[in-house]
Amino acid sequence: MQTIEDVHLAQAMNYVEAYDLDIGLLINFGSKSLQFKRVHNNSKQPKS
Image (tube, rainbow, N blue to C red; front, side):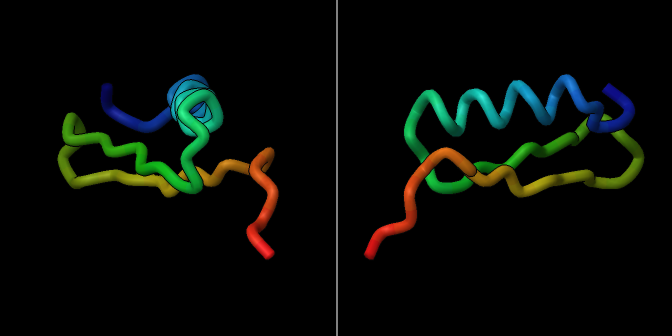
């Protein structure tokens, strides 16, 4: 994988939602420089 594509981001978002996590990291070690994105669970309600 040379770059992080939308399909990878969508899969990471699905994992975060499926495991009921607040946040996740999508990391690509395959490119010349490290690439990463933070993935938030938009369906999770904030704690009050």
